[in-house]
Structure formats: structure tokens, C-alpha cells
Amino acid sequence: MQRIAVFPGSFDPITRGHESVIRRALPLFDEIVVAIGENSEKKSFFPLDRRLRWLDQIFGHEPGIRITTYAGLTIDFCRSENAGFILRGLRTSADFEFERGIGQMNKMMYPEIETVFFLCVPEYVSVSSSIVRDVLRHGGDVRQFVPEGIVF
Image (cartoon, rainbow, N blue to C red; front, side, top):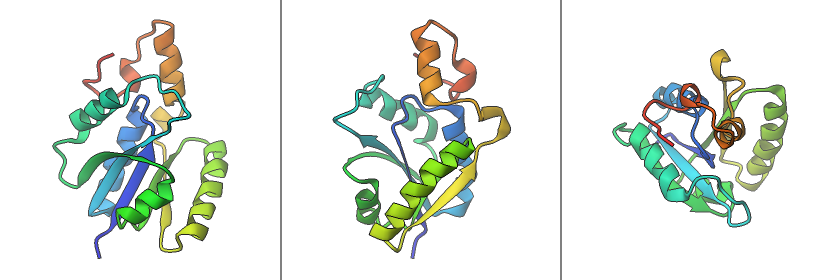
């Protein structure tokens, strides 16, 4: 059986922290599905097609990484992908508490799934998509917070 992990997120925008988690996790899995969750109730800062292009620009050449979108429950998407793992990055203890609750609910709904947590490397602990968006809104330079080549 293949070891397939889903790394779900809005990637609005993708950060160096996201990139780090994906690259560090790659040796552990046969495939990582980087999946942008579409939420019609939530207004994104960047359009879906741009976020997909960025992911493709960063990971499109990597064998073992597939980029896609999905709607609905992440756990249902994982089941449809025959994924045995959900990959999540943790920056803070608050992230852990939040992700632990979701991971436990997912386990109850789909007992075959395991949530795998990757600790953020220290240099990206303070970097989040929300902060990057806020810096952008105010005209700041975010190049150090997003993967190389991402242009706004």
C-alpha cells in the first residue's frame, strides 16, 4: 500500500513555513497531495488560480508531489485519495491544541487516517499567511516570508 499524505490548506499565500514542511516530509511518503481547500463561505485574499500557479511553480517539478483543490470535509477528500495520513505543520502550542482537536475528530470519522505533525523550523515560527497578508496590505516587503520566485 502506498503511503499517501494530504497536506491541506488555503495557502493564501503559501509561506516558507509551508514549503519547509512539505520538503521535509517528502522522504517519508510516496506521495504528498498538496490540496487547497475551497471554502465558499470564506473570502480568500488571492484567487484560487493564482494560489494553484504558485504551488505548481514551487512543486510542479517534484516527483511525489501532486497539487489539487477540494471542497467539503478534508477527511472525505483524504478517503477519496486513499490517503493514510494528514500532514500538518505546528508553529506554536496554540496550533497544537487546535490541530489536535481536528486530528481526533478526523480519527473518529476515518479510523484509518493518522495525522502527522511537523514542527516548524525556528526561523519560520512567526511566519503565517495571515501576517504575510497584513504586511502586503500595508505595502511591506514579504519576500523573506514566501518561497523564492513568488511575486505579488
